[in-house]
Length: 303
Ligand SMILES: Cc1cc2nc3c(=O)[nH]c(=O)nc-3n(C[C@H](O)[C@H](O)[C@H](O)COP(=O)(O)OP(=O)(O)OC[C@H]3O[C@@H](n4cnc5c(N)ncnc54)[C@H](O)[C@@H]3O)c2cc1C
Image 1 (spheres, rainbow, N blue to C red):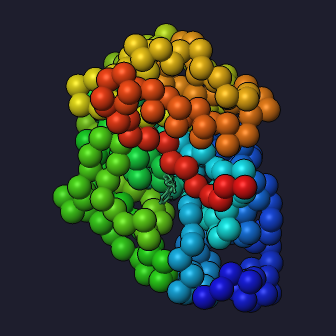
Image 2 (image 1 turned 120 degrees about the vertical axis):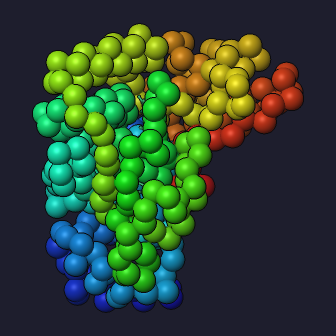
Image 3 (image 1 turned 90 degrees about the vertical axis):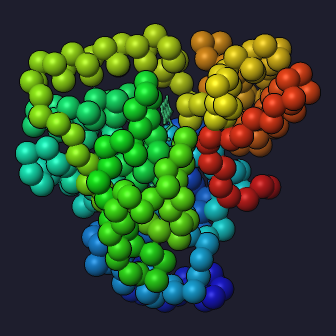
């Protein structure tokens, strides 16, 4: 189905929730990206399902969380961006140690909610600046923990509008990813921890946050680690040892504190970030024979 023929239909049926040609730079932590043809912000699951059935057959759809792992190209996105609002940010206790979280809840809110309910095991989420939807797709984690270790199930909707519950046992999670189809939109997830004393949970959270502050830069326009760590090696060290520290393209640079964090100084273009990524990858390959794999996602069209 052609996008233009969809637009008229969508405009008439979802006028409050659809936005056309809106710039995406506010949807990514890099603060970069051209316009999206359509942005859809569903009010609830029923509306999302109805929307997907209306556009059935059109597959150029991307869901965005808070964009802390996504570089959006300068040419924007020639398709439909789905962005969840408040109605997907619910949090509740299913039983004494099991939490259900909407896909747009911030990871740190889940961690705080677990603390308030004396549930341990979710403290690491306080160090990840994304949403639950993004965390599942990325199998996000740090300091030896990741989403796969606390997940019970994911509730998702496919591009045909069908709702599914997928159990953790049926998902293959790996380092910074999973095998769940790109045609699935996660709407909520269920996590399980263990009961513990509030003071102990709080201490663990504080320690992790402190550690994170020491290890990584903050208050900058970045999407965190650009490349995945290859087997047993650290990407930041390979980048540093290959002589890439200090490399600059336009207003895109590599953080001095953490060589795997690439940053928009203020006026970079996505093209500059992508150019910097390619240069670093080539240099590391040339010096070490290792081909770094991207951790961040790059979406959209080049100009
Ligand atoms: C300063 C900083 C520090 C970071 N530290 C860490 C860290 O310690 N560990 C770590 O793992 N990551 C880290 N990250 C990366 C990032 O925060 C995580 O990958 C995070 O989970 C991404 O969530 P998001 O909502 O921002 O996802 P987005 O960037 O919006 O999206 C990421 C991917 O998830 C998909 N997605 C998002 N929501 C949904 C949904 N509802 N359904 C289906 N697919 C969806 C998107 O399509 C995209 O493919 C860091 C980033 C920054 C900026």
